[in-house]
Image (cartoon, rainbow, N blue to C red):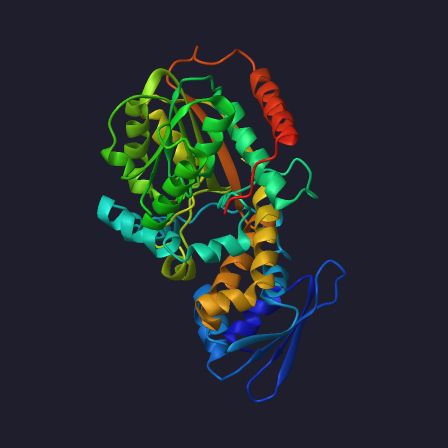
Length: 419
C-alpha cells in the first residue's frame, strides 16, 4: 500500500472517495454517507500520488492547480470536506502529552517566514491584495469586506452579514461624534467610511496595499468625506499621534508572532488614556501552530494565524486590558461559502483576468479555508482592549443597545452599492 493510500485509509472515515490512477487502476476509500458527497478523483500522471504522499497539502494543491489532479465527480470543496471534516477538531482523538522535541521543531518551522519587517510586510501584502480589483468585485460583497462576516441568521445574504459585522464592531467601539479613529489595515475603506457615516467620527485608515489605497481614497472623495476619512500608505510602526479609538480587522494575521509585542506596544502608545481598541482576527482554537507550505507560498507569504494564547500574553505586556473577548465559531465558514459559490459562478471571468491555473489556485485556497473553519481548528476572535478599566460601562448592555440601533438605522436606509 502506498503512502498516499495509507493516509487516505485513515482520513476518509465518512463518505466515499474513489481514486483513478493514470494506468486506469481504481481504489475506493470509506463508504457512502448522506452527509458527504461521493467524490471521484483522477490522477493525470504517475507522479501525482507520490507528490501528495510526501507533502499532502502542497502536493495536492499544486497538482490541482496544474490540472494533474482532476475531480471528476463532485468538486475540490467536496474532496477537501471529505478528508478534513470526517474527523473534526472537536473529535481529534485522545489527547497525549506534547512531545518536547516535536514542539521545539514546530516552533522553529516557519519562524523566518514570520519576520515581517516593514519592507517585507509591504511586499507580502502586495502579493495578495494588489491583485486586480475586478477579481475581488467578483466574489466579495458590495462594500468589498474581505474578512469574516457576522451572521445573525445563517440564511442571511452576504451583504446583510457584512453590514451586521460592521455594526457588531462599531457597537464594541462605544463611539460618539467627534472622536478620532485609527483603522489599521483599512482594506478598501469600507469600515472607515461606515464608522464616519454612522457615528460622525474622523477616521484615518492605513494600508500597505497601493491598490486598496487608490480605491479607498476614491470612495472617500465620491462620498464627499475625504476631509474626515483619510487613507495613507504607511506601516503601523511608523505612526505617531493619539487616537480615541483603534480598530483593526483582518490585519493581525500579517503581523507575525515575533512582532506581536511591538504591535500592542504601538497600539497602546497611539491609544488615548480613555480609548478603546477592537482587534478582529482569524485565530486557532488549539495552541500555536505553523502556516502550511502551500498557503505560505501561493496565498499569504509571511502570514500566520495566532492562537489566543499568543495574542493575550503579548497584549498583557503592553498593559492593555482585554475588556471583552468573543469567539466567532462558524461565521467565517458561512462567509467563505458565499465567496466560494461566487468564485465558481464567475469562473469564466476569473480565467479571463488571469488563467485556468490561477482560478484553480483561488478555488483551492477558498475550499481549504472554508473547511478549516467548518471542521478544522480555525475560528475568529474579537478582542476589545482598553487602557483604563473605567473607560467603558460596567456591563456589556451598551454593546447590544448600540448594535440594535445601528441595525435598525441600516434597515431604514440601506447602503448604496459600491461601484
